[in-house]
Length: 115
Image (cartoon, rainbow, N blue to C red):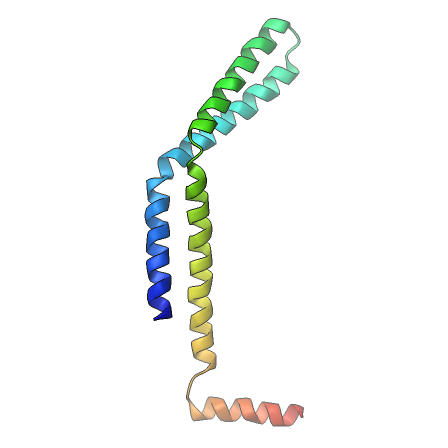
């Protein structure tokens, strides 16, 4: 039942991620343009160049703000990561709690030796 829950949550997160791929790309491009234009504006010596680079930086900011729903895509990536870790963790726990009598004997023998 736990695996089914993880599968459902992972599926929903994957759908949200796929739906937000476009805005995520737009956010990345907008932030890159804004960063590059800001760096060029700070390095420019004339007032005209500073103005145009600053205007381009504002355009990049507008593009980044318009693609703000991409944050949902980032949250979906994190949820997928958590689901992946939980899925693998439960597989490891299943191996440790096996009903194999030889594994149980070895575990109990190790406990007796350490006591």
